[in-house]
Image 1: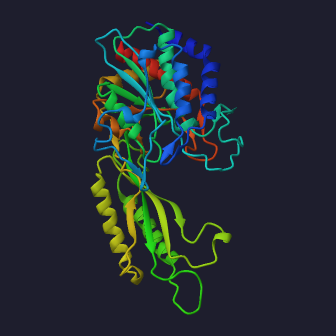
Image 2 (image 1 turned 180 degrees about the vertical axis):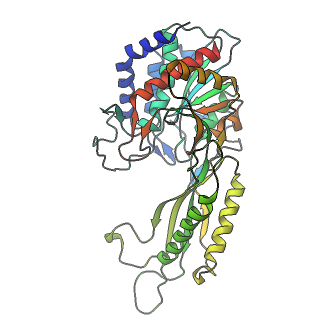
Length: 434
């Protein structure tokens, strides 16, 4: 059985190849582009990398439509903003190092899709897909969320293989599609296809903390519509939806500050953590001067509404709508035309890890051997972690590298924490699966 010195030596010896691999993966555009996505080139890159040390029968590159009972599963969510999701040429990838038998199984899980770069100008390196390094950080869309974490799982498998570490249990690395934009159907597909993996490390970025709880939430739209003709003129009243939108925005801000701001977080989170309502888009009448020139008749606000793990979708929706109805009732504008509120993506549930699970002790040992600070805490992010226990028999914890600006300009990942994550994964597999 390999010792820590051998694992450290392997990572240092392979460091250049590992960083080149991450850079090349970042350069491959795998943006989630609803109702479809462009993950396949990245999945094929990982497949080719893994095929150099894993037999073909243990590499599973499969389309979601191949998975039995997927679309019948109650958690499968077929649409986004009313559009039917499309999964042709968007395969999941699962790689397995088969154990000798009789041991516990472990999966390193990540997603290949990224949020779009959206044409924004980046500062450190102009190219959003540069994969370049500066001051110990690698930059590019998806570097933090979550190509580094995903790739770490595959290199952990390679380290176990190269060092000839013989384990009793199977060890998996997977890369799923369509996690962003509230997707999760890729994760559900893998859970249905591999329902009996004992434990998973989901490598979303956590600053190397052990994420034993995550939040939930959903994206919403509030729509207003005026009955007036719009346009311009002097012979008729021209009611303006923008004034209604402003009142809705003020009510949303009040809910954020006065309701969500007063809900105490569970003990796993930092004391100053709180739920948020984040407004993403306020739109009516165009986005620039050349699109203006007439009074609009409709408008909308997109916003994100968060929830804790113990809150159900019905509870969140009912409490929110009750508040908005009471708050907007003071305005004559809404007596005959109340705004339409609805979700545009699935409700993402929070998750909570069983900290007494044997794999958690293996993780703690890994941190101790590496002399890394270990902290179990709630992570104030929503993700696909909930699908593991709701769909399969797999317990899950969230552990990923340090990074900055996920979904934003100059997204980057800390290189040292990325390399340490590989070591954590290998040591956990040795103790838990051995």
